[in-house]
Amino acid sequence: MANAGVQRTLALIKPDAVNRAAEIEKVITEEGFTIVERRQVTLSQADAETFYAEHKGKPFFETLIEYMTSGDVIAFILSGDDAVARWRQVLGPTKVSVARQEAPSSLRARFGDPGNDSKNGTHGSDSLTSAQREIKFFFPDLTLEAALTGEGAKEYLSHTVSPLLVRGLTELCRERPEEPITWLADWLLANNPNKP
Image (cartoon, rainbow, N blue to C red; front, side, top):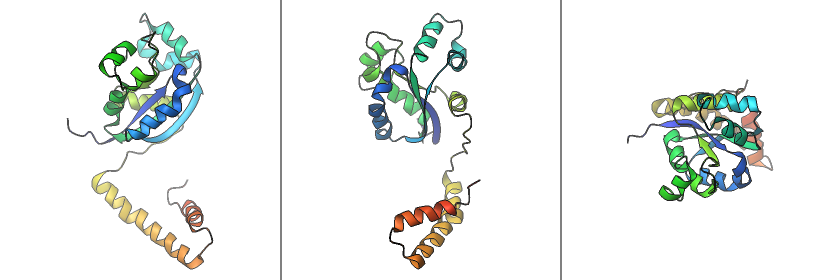
């Protein structure tokens, strides 16, 4: 399959796996994803019903809502090449028993409840469209610009980032502060051309 390019997707650690969040985050970074944003929240019944509205009327809907409101969830925006499909692969099959058999190193096999196929511990958007909707649900105030690639990225680096760094490093050489890294970080924050 051809590389789909840099994408963003939503990842959730569900209530029964929150106590294993550090291990799951380690897998996220080891798999090459960038964590763009992270948020821990307890879903209300209304929130859970809105998030899972596509499943309303299905036999498992009430149990799913009860599960998702039983404690905190941790939501992540992950970024990476072909992030939607790759994250789904890292998760493994939806049912814990199937994941344990077919993908024993997957997150759902490792962190899902072996006694309950529905309590799979993790979630991932199933398409780019779902990812956009789900990210907006958990991070409604966050504005994400499309990731630059190819010539657009090169142009941004050469016209915006490089000149800013040259100015900052020049000032750093003039000032010669005791803590050069901290000084440069503060200077870059103060001179960020993208700040509101």
